Image (cartoon, rainbow over all chains, first blue to last red; front, side, top):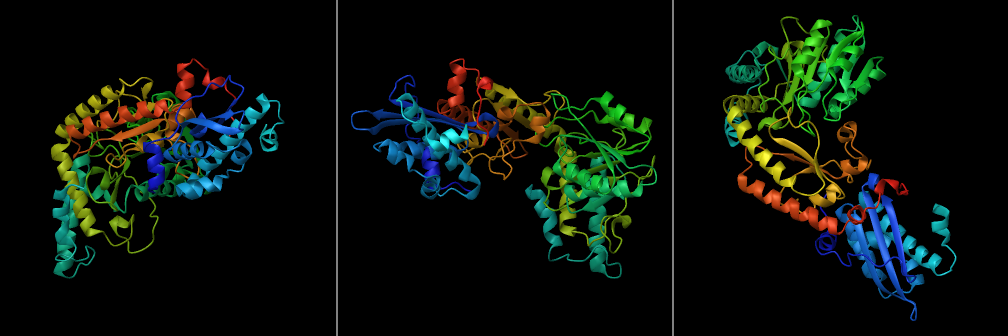
Length: 138
Length: 390
């Protein structure tokens, strides 16, 4: 199975690798996956509280090329969106954009989970209600 | 495949097309002679008699024939087989089948270095035990089991000893007499021969071993394996054995020196671990875990130029990491972080330099991207985190 050009590009030149200060109230952090499963993603968003837009997004991923590409793509898509718009990102959008084969769909699911977990962390820090999907997963 | 092997095979496709089982014309005789010659070449490499060589379609078939064939043939003596958890799937799955047919199978655990415990082996033998099946060299970590000690235990208890020699034959000296082997499988393509051809060695003296055929038909190969012989493949396998016989010693020296150099350089990388026993192992393999980096992601950095495999099976449907590494007691995380290296006749020093450089660069780059590496560096106890399993 060969990787798509887009996966190779994100793997070779990943966008937005890094760490935001998780102690800041306007930063939301999502950490999903497990080392035993071979995938761990940490995705962070920083929200500009005046405009309500996501001003920065960073990731770090332990996983295969498709997992790295999925999280890199997710950070690109997050920037400039409102938190509510970010919630609408669906894992199948990632599958289509990166041409992921069926065995790699779980990488896109993990990226969507990471986005939701980061948003949820941001909401909880700012006195908003927990997302239902995330609360249900606990 | 070695080009010298191809050269030996080529005449047997078109020019010398006869069926080795056709006894009444010269085309058949030419083919039969070629097969006989190859049988001698194969036998010589492992110290056997030509009559003890049964040609098959590969090691998988030979493993099935040995295990199921002995189980059926010796049913009146007992129904118990002893093997170990790090065997090749062709052995483990054949054993699972035997269990369904009413057999009893003991799967011995291995020690953390990948070797079996001889005391545990001897303890597992019962009056119903007919066969011990322990591989010679492991396909993932390269460790060589104490074959002579195993065969001595088997002898002492009147039990047959079968070994999957696929990784070892042609790489290290294997002698069925000195090693006390009763049955042994191996295949052509692991020793620079063609794919689709393999061997089951079946001892004829002290003791005379028999297996029940697993395919019914014309009674080829002394009645143990029916089916028209793959003449070009067999000729190629014979040639491959002859080349190994002549070149194995110098090749093993050359490969182990390169392997050691590769290993020493990669061990300079922080948090890198060699998996399996480093003293008792094949000269051309190593298996290394680079902690906090996932193996498949790591391979993607250089898989255009280097063919390796990983203990992480992210591409397989199961998502389970290597069962061999897990049997050594490695956590799933370290198994996911492993790379398996195999050097060969055509590996050069330049390729080793390239590999060292490519892997070192890739590991450092991926660790910059790894949340686990960041946590490790910050002193976070990763094992204490409650991970959501998906």
